[in-house]
Length: 289
Image (tube, helix red, strand yellow):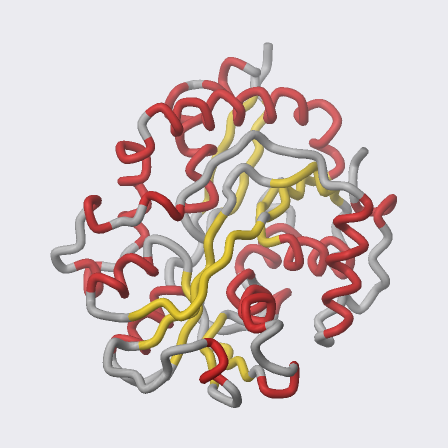
């Protein structure tokens, strides 16, 4: 049987760990699928949404799939020119956290009224900053600043250049190991998006392989989580080791369907903050059921 090749982008091992494990263990190969995980830009410097590597490469046909935060996938699926399907929720239930330095005068989320919080615009860090601050601050007092990827934001926090940042693992644990404090954190899901030409023949095989990979990870989470440390640049990692990583923030589950109720709730929430796609997102147009 001829293998089907699907290239999926990674903006962090946190999100693609099941794909990496599935490749190493041959789970995708068993399904007649060859998966390539592409890591386009370790720094993720600030750029408009459709000028970033993930969107540019997908639109150009250099990728067949990506998994991003729920809202980011809706944005790219609705406004992108190349057709695809949202297949379901991704396997990584990621954690985002808002952090400050240990010597910061901010101790509560309520203290961040009007304080610029560094994120990457219209990615999980951006959306989750609003999510975490809802109930603490009115919308007009939530201030975000587009700084780029997590390594950039971590450097800025440690150097005292940014008063607060939003990060994911392994950068949360890294910042904590340097004395930074978490003011709030929350888990959220992301979505898997695949080119329409590849969705029909490959979906079941992809999901079978990912379920096997999730089981493999959960049998020895610490062993597999060590791969996350490769995302930390040399100038930041210093003596940070796997025992410093908070494994309780890592949660890998079987892929789940993405319901119309969940889709509509997310799209409505994006509208509230002026982050909705340019084209009205419609569940039946974007989600494969």
